[in-house]
Length: 164
Image (cartoon, one colour):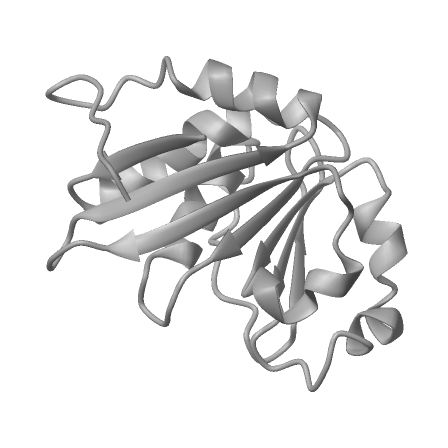
């Protein structure tokens, strides 16, 4: 497990960008946090790290947005799903077991369908602009990814780690 603190939305994006640069085909990033926690800001950074040039916005009302970069980026928002079974109608297997990177906001709403190998990311506000991000790897690949993320250099003051 790794916990990092970001001091602004841009730092959260930058952290996401580092994660996007490290991402491999088939990576599943499951993001947890309340409304306004910074999940979409993190998604914007991951997309930027994958080379996506389009503006990334929340897919809340359309459930999933697809972007092209170095790897396909699938941004899924499970908030409005009526139940995890709705994933079946979205064709989740094509996304979860494909060659792209899947970023799932509100992953707790589809927990039963998530693959065992994944990276869980918990985003928690800490004041107006600070965010605590806890990375919990599920599987050896994601443990290695978190180890690599420990080297993340925050713009400005260097690394920040905090308890969560």
